[in-house]
Image 1 (cartoon, rainbow, N blue to C red):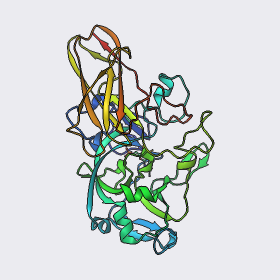
Image 2 (cartoon, helix red, strand yellow):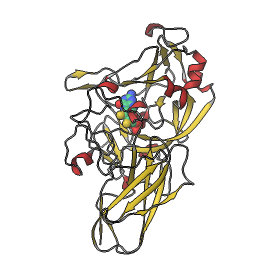
Image 3 (cartoon, rainbow, N blue to C red):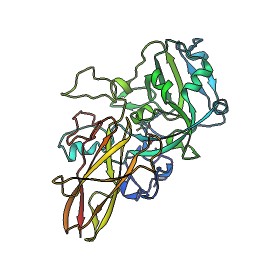
Image 4 (cartoon, helix red, strand yellow):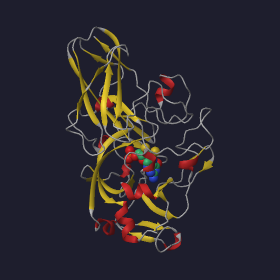
Length: 365
Ligand code: MTE
């Protein structure tokens, strides 16, 4: 039965269900396809998917960072039709939850963390359609000394452990807005599904998923730094190894996944195994794989041709003579900034950024 918190069907052969969240199963990925269809993309909701009426929808803009400052009460209002008059922009990027891979802190590193126990399926690659935020800001007028923009969603306020944190919202620097931020109404050529932010969401390519606020209600543009619990309490590294003032997380790390179920059974004959690697900061330049639990490594063959913009990189490796028994597959990627996946992820109590090489068990029968 469908969860009341997520509106699209999340059948168990495609998704692992966490009630308000749903994880894409890597075993169900269409190996021939590059982009993640909306129907298969993970869902991460703090509360539940709201139903927003696109015909009356308006994005509200206010703050002292606008060229003509405006209070919240007399915010500028932009309809979808207003936004669609600006130059249309398309861009393919990875969307990934900060906590993707979190469960491996527990199962691989024996550390305890809080939060949704994702394996590696809180990620997808999609082609966004919308407008550049910089064009929107130019059309309404941006103050030259504006520094910070707070994006707020229209979903219910988030209440956890008896604390009401208010609406889901997170500030980001004006520099990111002027660089590659998108206000998107479409994904892979379709309107957004309600679960993915219909009718409009913010997209900050390469950044932690929380930065891409769904059901975007307002943008507050400010001449001073804005904050919210989503950059002070959540989505920061916390715990004994981290300073009390560790910065908000922004750019996603390098990660890899095999297009196989954990514990998959493979026949004892030559096989080509496939996977994908991605980085929030750049292109994947190298993927090393091990088919023997990390004793020996070889390069995977990268498929650079199918890569779009800032999407992921597909790769494959030929396993010539799989011997019967249990094996561990490992994949370790490097991006063009020289960032390589570590063997151990940096522990933090909220389980963010598990970027270590994952030990993927398979059995040859
Ligand atoms: N925006 C709003 N308004 N409310 C949310 O709960 N979740 C964030 C982000 N934007 C969220 C949100 C998180 S944590 C992630 S990882 C992405 O949306 C997930 O996007 P998706 O559900 O479209 O995959």
